[in-house]
Length: 216
Length: 233
Image (cartoon, each protein chain N blue to C red):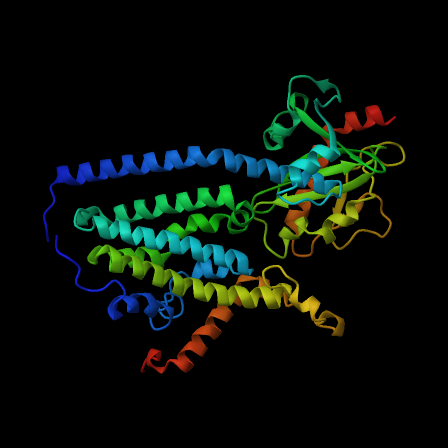
């Protein structure tokens, strides 16, 4: 058996993990997976559960597809990828219903819609089909973390400004903002504000990371 | 690129489908009891909430046993039916049947100030089903409390039916007028008249959900009308 001379946490492998957090962020740079980022980020808790669910699905799917990559007939590879994703998503949905019922009610159809999350299909087709399992696993974790990072930032601001809470804890009430006439911004709860927050994140990110700015 | 024969592709697809089916069926079978338990606990919490008993997933069972002292099933004439379990009856199925064939569950809650008659509700909102429980005072005319839930009403609009500001005004309203005629509760667009005993405010921007809720109250409570009148007098 050919040994893998590269160490498990070599610089090249670590880049798979860290690149999607910033330079190749699936949401803010590739603009994938936006629909779920709008829908489930009203509060922090579902955002985190969604991020973990996507991480589980994406990393496992990446490994499975990578292991099978030499056996999968190219003509039906998209179908195979979809079957792998769909079964993992159904598993995640079932597990959430059994162990995190409240959260699974909040996420409702969006767990099922992980199947259609473009990030997952994109990583399977672009990375897992051509790489060994370990890098594929890191790529899956990295991309899901990049996705989750944005979800958590958006969820934090929407919950704080929309309901005045963080993780359901009434922060703004405790520090007494309401007594001086502050009111929650109801618009924050609606999907358009998620889009605007994502836009602000993209703006801040590009201001800091100038190599992302396209020339034209 | 490596060539794959049709036979290989066909076998690969078949084996894949069989493996996936096996894995998912096993997972579903293993997790089913836990999931059913969660659904039952949520139902208990909703029933308790209609008589103003707050509970968590952990203490729902214990509080349900403490506060819900009796359950039984009646028909639309208000006669008790034997051999049915009120807790497992699905109101969604019952409401599709003709009035005379419905099996109607009744839960009796016991609070410090008397027995409360709790009945389940099921109807249509804008995007999907809405449901809930309504608790009547001992006089069987006055509402003691309500609990509404929904699957996919619009957040901030129709979804407000599950918020306390919408549910609280129901308490103290009556579903029969002075002559004993069934009036149900109107969900009034633009706001109910202050002091109107048969109406509450609708949700601005949630008119269709509000109207759906009004229809749900009318249809479901109508099934229980004879029962309320029978033992009420």
